[in-house]
Amino acid sequence: MRRVAGLSSRQRLLFGGAVLGGVAIVVILLVIVIAQTSAADEQPIAFNHKRHAENGIQCQFCHAGVAKGPVAGIPSVEKCMGCHEYVATDSPQIQRLHGYWERQEPIPWKRVNEQPSFVYFNHASHIAAAVSCGACHGAVEEMTVAEPVVNMNMGFCLDCHAQQENKDALWDCAVCHR
Ligand code: HEC
Ligand code: HEC
Ligand code: HEC
Ligand code: HEC
Ligand code: HEC
Image 1: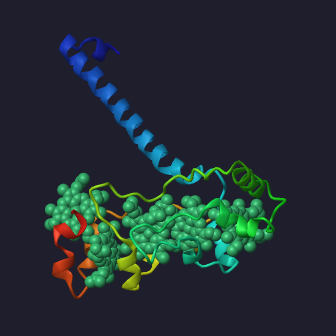
Image 2 (image 1 turned 180 degrees about the horizontal axis):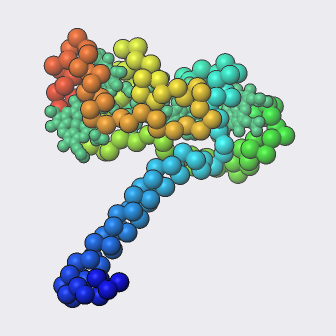
């Protein structure tokens, strides 16, 4: 304390500033960590990919847009009800699903993967080239909660494009930034 008290007012200001700066950095890091985990953790219904995969339901049965265009698509409540009108009806989660159905409300799923708007991505061309879902999304069939386990930054996209025969065309900035 004596040493701190012995500082000039300018030194004390600098010292205080450094402490405040440190606290601010910790707070910002915490906010980032919380923001990244909450999206996956708090879905309106505890949808479980592993459970559905174990029952032999294919990815494309629910994400039917994946081979047709940019957007994979999330299944409608009606699609869920095709099975859950009969399956696991005494589960509280399924009763919640029935609530959305009766109110004719869409389920407000939180997005897990999202690219910035200046990036162009299209599922269909990748599916046509036989790139597996797992190459970009990890082992979703093992997940109880869908999470973004692969960091799909620019380097990730370019690494795989570099291994393709038409590498030069696929490295053109305008392929992904149109
Ligand atoms: C019974 C329907 C169903 C099946 C089958 C299914 N999904 Fe999903 N999927 C969903 C629903 C509902 C969501 C939204 C809730 C969530 O994120 O868990 C979702 C979310 C996702 C997401 C995250 C979407 C986002 O917001 O970025 C990915 C990736 C995904 N699924 C991939 C797959 C893959 C790969 C398979 C096959 C192994 C698969 N899904 C099978 C229904 C299904
Ligand atoms: C093709 C049939 C099918 C479709 C479509 C389907 N499910 Fe399922 N779902 C199942 C089966 C089978 C189970 C496993 C039931 C069991 O283990 O008793 C299951 C289990 C569940 C469970 C766990 C129930 C519990 O608490 O034990 C939830 C939650 C669930 N599904 C939600 C959904 C949602 C939400 C959708 C739509 C996005 C959906 N399901 C679409 C067949 C389906
Ligand atoms: C080459 C990488 C890649 C492959 C392969 C891939 N995805 Fe995706 N997926 C992405 C990216 C990138 C996004 C985010 C797109 C955005 O924000 O515009 C995404 C988003 C999604 C979403 C949420 C948004 C939407 O489009 O509905 C779902 C669901 C999804 N993928 C499912 C699948 C399934 C199922 C497969 C396999 C049949 C698959 N993906 C294969 C990269 C991929
Ligand atoms: C695991 C390999 C792989 C990864 C990862 C990958 N791609 Fe691709 N990409 C391909 C292949 C293969 C093609 C098809 C090449 C062809 O048909 O000539 C392609 C083609 C494309 C095309 C041109 C076709 C079209 O639809 O316009 C775009 C755009 C594209 N990728 C964007 C992306 C973006 C953005 C990412 C990262 C989020 C990404 N890719 C990650 C393998 C990959
Ligand atoms: C295969 C797809 C792909 C190609 C080709 C590509 N980019 Fe990107 N780029 C991305 C993705 C995905 C992002 C999203 C930001 C991230 O997470 O890295 C991005 C982000 C960026 C950003 C923003 C960086 C940031 O930190 O926010 C710039 C600038 C950029 N790209 C420039 C370029 C230039 C210049 C080229 C050509 C030399 C290029 N990109 C080629 C996929 C691509």
